Amino acid sequence: MKLKVRIFSIILIACTLAGTIVYARSGQSIFENRSLFPKSRTTVRLWYTDDSLTSYLQSKAVAYSENNQNVRVEPVLVSGLEYLEAINKASLTNDNYPDLFIITNDSLEKAYLAGLAMEITDGEDYLSPEMFPDAAISSVSYNGRYIAYPMYFETSSLVYNKTYMEEMAVANMQSEIDAAEGEAAQAEIDASSDEASEADSSEATSDVPTEITQVMIEEEIAHNLPLTISDILKFAESYNAPEQVEAVFKWDVTDIFYNYFFVGNYMNVGGKAGDDVSLIDIYNTDTISCMKIYQQLNQFFAIDADDIDYDKIVSDFIDGKIVFTVATTDILGKIKEAQDAGECPYEFAVADMPGLTADFGTRTMSVTNCLVVNGYTEHITEANAVARYLCNDNSGDIYVNSGKVAAHYGVKYNDSNINTFVDVYNDSVPMPKTIETSNLWMELEIAFTKIWNGEDCNATLRAVSESIMTQITGEAYTEEFIPDPDDEAITAGLTEESD
Image (cartoon, rainbow, N blue to C red; front, side, top):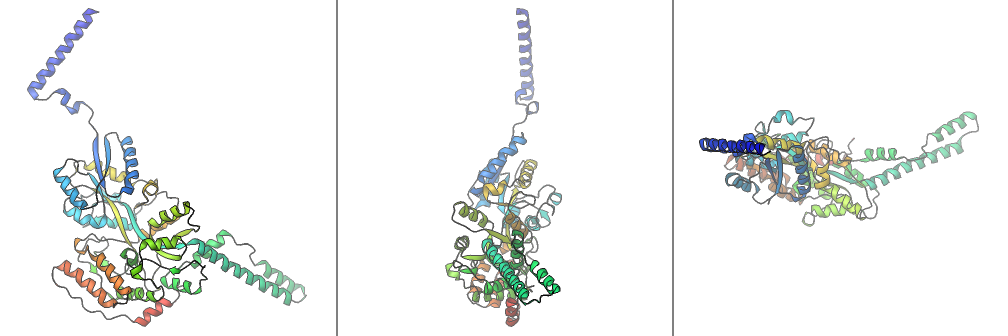
């Protein structure tokens, strides 16, 4: 036994001496040579500014790390003030800079030019129209490159009180049934006693439905949903509103996000991807016509621009004071919260954004929050993999935990209203990325308010265009005057009922 111990001791001393010799010659101990041992985990830091994402990102970080033993995801909540500047500073001077960060798509050009956004891996194959809405793909495109991953979005659409629509549908169908039964009864009274007449009377009576089913109600609602703003005007004229209803249609006329659909189909700011300053068309005949329609609605829907905001609109809508409104996806969570608290007895639904008239269509604005791979990261492969993991999440957790709607298809929401918002998002206009047009939205918001309050549509739009073009060209710019469209034709189109 003692002999074995001695032999083992001699071997141990020999190994120690050999290690000492190797260290002396190479300057490195075998215990410091990482190639001989498993590597430590790579940390992928993800910066974000919206605290509502915290629970979701933390849960996904844990799940990802459990399935990828060599990678640790670290979500970091930071201030939104001077966000890109903070990322740039950390990337240049700090070891704890983000490998990934979340920003809105309108900031992508600034991030890319600062070296903070890099082209994603195999973007052409990954960002397929089968997986991502068209607006999502356009939102992360810059100069022919895909420089971010679309994560979640916000857009607006028409939302309506479904309870009111159901009540109206039942009332309409019951009136038809009552009328049909009355005609059948009268026919029976007036019928002669011969067998043929009795057969005819019996057949007429059997055609009258005796019960209103939910399928019939849904079909009637679909038939009555407005396809245009003109249809809403027609609806308002004939609708027998409940006592608590104060407005058939009301929206925030002071916020460009809820107004842009009026001109979105005809205003071009940077092309499809919003990244080309040579493609700017703000002032044209169609946008003037659409703004004239917008202005004329003031006489039909008296909305005081000085005494309204989105939160008040949503509150009144949930309280049953408004039948139709224009809202963003956040309204669904607010509705559920009110229903769960027993403060809202109504059901609501989302519809596609209606056109203006039979001649003028609409397109809403959207903003996409994107996952950006930092141009300074040393973990390019790992950062891209984490971004794709989040963008491949079909669980619906992003909505349950944060109230956000994912910017890709296939997510299990269990709510058709969210899916309608996704469809609207697909055809929306992403906010442009060009730095030169960054203040366009503020100028448009001011312009919409002026026009709503009666200022000249033509002159107001022309001034906005000249201001933006001056910023782009770097010198005073004057738009060639465009004659006003025919006001009578526009008014006629607004009051005509669409097919």
